[in-house]
Image (cartoon, rainbow, N blue to C red; front, side, top):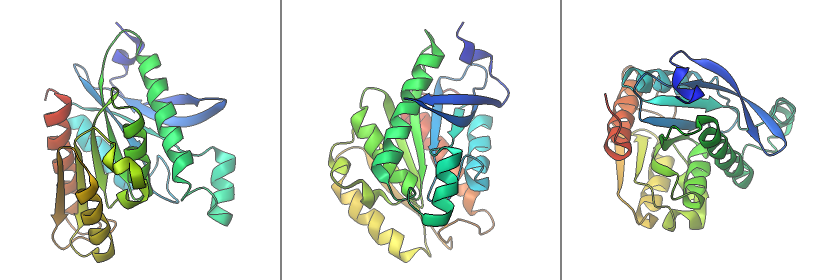
Length: 224
């Protein structure tokens, strides 16, 4: 049995990406067949309360989760002052792809189906990383994402992709509609009525989680 199978409780991990070590939190419910990696948005981290909420809902549904910081502590401090890294989609996608390799190696002989959950700019990073790892990534969910920033990767991604946008987030709706037209895989755009960009309205984030659970279970063949 692989080491990863024993992590039925949320567990701090050090995610190694090249020469870097990134702080993360891994949890894999017993009998889980899938793990979802979270790519947070600009100015956020693995401690994002919205992603933390969605991750808990996924785990309750039997899906494993890996939340990790896309930036090192030094980079986060620089970014807080300069916003130098938050829109560097190439860097963020490379970190996500590297974390995927780390997870596969960490899992050892145990095989898990992998999904990506991206928020804001993290959605663009997820699409680019998935396009570069078609054999590793089985599904993508974007919450209030900027998939338009993925540019040419939109037409290359092979993983079924769900785009979730708030109904009162007009500019992002338009961006997602354009991105949807460029995707060539199984795809869907879900608009949550009355929700704004951060889905802070009562019940909005619960709807996001439910849609994500259904999508991941459908395409990652995850058991309840």
